[in-house]
Image 1 (cartoon, one colour):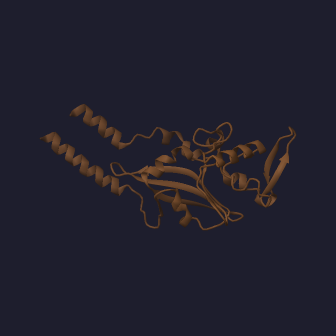
Image 2 (cartoon, rainbow, N blue to C red; image 1 turned 180 degrees about the horizontal axis):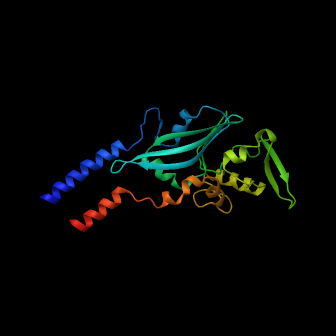
Image 3 (cartoon, rainbow, N blue to C red; image 1 turned 180 degrees about the vertical axis):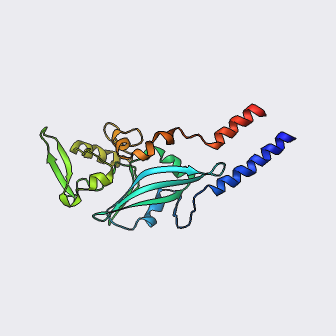
Amino acid sequence: MYKFFLYAMLIIIYLGLAKALSPSEIGIHYLQNERGFSKLIKGDLATVILVDTHATGFLIKTYYQKYRVISGYDTVEELIVRTSKEFAQKNLKHIGLSLYRKTDVSEEFLPLPPGSIYMGNREFGDWSKNKKGESRWIFHKAFKNFPRYLGWGTFRPTREFYQELKSKVSLNQPYFGPNGEFGPNGKVTRENFPQFFKDERMKKVEMKTLLIEYFKENF
């Protein structure tokens, strides 16, 4: 009887903490799936990059994603939204990728390396050969900060990269780079979005796990 009472009390406390520790949702938009970007992102030539994702609460989970939104010709902002569990879990493997792109005539929802919307657009840059004879995409001086905004670091896409990207788009397949440079396992993403990969986040132990272990040992 005592153990049953203890179990009930722990559940009640659990639910209370889950609600109390969840951030306020006042003013935070909700995304059921990627189609919700259409109403959320207003600017043209916009790309939405997933830079962080996390869940709060214990038994009752609330899922959040953080995006870097680049729109227009030099406008950058960060946006936090609440999402469905399915959308959050689906995109765990898409950290550092662009989940949504918008021009004045079309929308794209396929996860791709950030900056794909600007590659090949002569308004933003051009292909330039380096000393090795490789053609790489270089932004014009007016957009010199774009590699930093996009999370490229020292990476610059080659024509081959661009052609392979377009091939994946034609097949409606996500693209992580020829050597998997982008995404949670990619070198470029890990170097330029380090906040998501901090050790303390990777080693975090949830209260739910601790309680499961408790009940295994005592019931």
